[in-house]
Length: 222
Length: 259
Image (cartoon, rainbow over the protein chains, first blue to last red):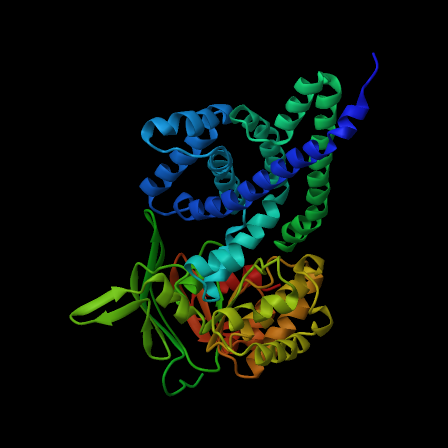
């Protein structure tokens, strides 16, 4: 078997464009779903049991839909209800919807793991409500769950390959396009795999650097 | 012990608290005059920490009232009665009371200086430059000026607790609450924290200290309160309490703890 890697080099711009689309879609989805997930924190940690249960049920429902199915629902199902989204909007919306449920749950677990003394001290020093969450709670939660968020981002990047089904030209779509045009399935999918590895390896590296901060927070709780 | 004149810094009238079926505090009356250091002693589970937390309403009393410099806190007068303060109003009251915790509860994502300046800048909204200058003076006072850019993770327990004291002082509090400030420390680190507290007592800071440190209570307290099963068993000047305890329970307690 001879590998026709020159085809891959020739089509490098298409792979690069696919990679770029994967990166920005997942990056934007991550930022948006982190913000939305943080909004869920209030209800998820509420003293009102009904509000808490309602929010938890919503989060569980979101986490328990397969990503591919959610993509079908958003892109093919919603038009029946009169909501027609172009493929980019549908792709981003699906990623955000899917990932928000995970982010909310990750942040909630991070908050629950915070020693109660942290909130007590914040209250004793005059904090309450949103300011307390923003200045004292959330920074510590984000640092503590950083590695988990990194893992979830890797998961999201892999799931985003399903977006090729709705013809979003992300990395897997680009690889598929190249292989079907030149009939080089092995070379093309190998190239895509290597690019996914590189991307996820970079995230892993960032996560390991962030662990220094997680250590600071854990030890500082004394 | 002469009764001091004037308005108490803190006054508790009939304060009580129950957790479920258990009454952890039964109608406590306590007055702390400005400049006094009152030590609250008592066996574990006697309600000491709960009592302290009722002062700044971290724990909401089920009965009674708390006054800070003559003004009732926790409830707000409205025409025809009173309503409970909301979180924001309680938060505003708490900025006038400093608190030091058994487990320090420093905010680990901030440096030492960040911990001390956080609330004065972001809650009290005092000018940043002035707060930082004052925080540096306070860190000097507790002997940690050289650690100001370090994170709490790199401090010993004694150093963390001294930062916690500086953090409380930076609020310019009318009153300082200490909740077993040395109980979580290695024995050899207790002294450095007590020394700082002793200085504060001598400077006339109003303090309520829940502690098991009998020597500190004897040397630094103006008054001692012995709490047992949620009730005040004895309240006396420090010297009187340790030299001439009036109740059998006090004598028992002193025998067990004073060594």
